[in-house]
Amino acid sequence: MSLFEELQDQMAKYRFRPEKKLSQFFCINESILDLMVEKAQLSKDDLVLEVGAGTGFLTKKLLAECKVIAIEKSPDMLQLLSEKFSKEISEGKLKLIGGDALEQDFSTLKANRMVSLPPYHISSKLVAKIVQSKIEKAVLMFDAGFLNKLTAFEGLMEYGALTVFANLNAQIDVVLSNVPGKEFFPPPGCSSAVVEINFLRKNVSNEFYFFLKELFRYKNKNLSRALKQARPFLENELKVRKDSAKKIEKLELGDVKVNFMTPEELIRVFEAVTEKN
Image 1 (cartoon, rainbow, N blue to C red):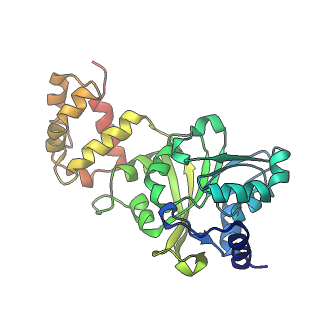
Image 2: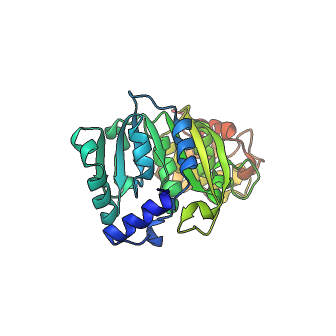
Image 3: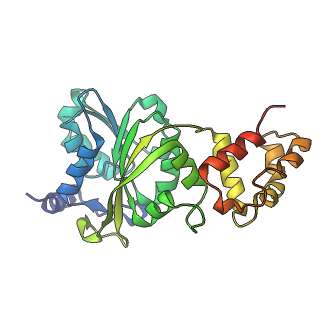
């Protein structure tokens, strides 16, 4: 039975239809799911996190390799997963969590791998959350447009705070760059992409990420001007002293536009800004 036929049977049995507001586009190409599992390099000792388990097509493949923690928001999908994997749940191979993945504390779950086709509308927040977790490797599918944001380089329109935060703390490799909509049901209004992320964390603090987001509000200004505009944030949120805030506006890279600064340059600026006096 093909995955599309299995999905049709599930939709009839559990009386559900994919919900666009939850970004429910179910992958029906088995070879893509197999490739994602292969790229994760799983062993029986791994504990893998899956966000948006949906119909359980990927979950089944992951369970053949290791233990799984699956998070699912939809009540219909939770019922389906609970019944489909009742044996694995009772044996402790699968932990099923209902609710919003963004509200979960990933560090308490103790997963060291992540393999998922998460809802596309939470991509930015989810990537930031993963960067700040203890997960060592992730294989994820995203909207191809989000991939452009994740892998952009200096000067591009898509280059932003998340680009810098992710690329300073991880090696991001594109596995598949153009997965057409026909590989899903229903087809999303975009192509998709699979990425492999290996984490090499340098600075995953909230302070650093908030600093980047504030600075990129002025991405088309030079650094000195952007820091001057951001001074209230620096003084109130990062507790930078007023005299220090004035000095940092005269940094070596002051004439460079924020959008043209490399991740390595931006972390140097952050360290200079927050240096203890």
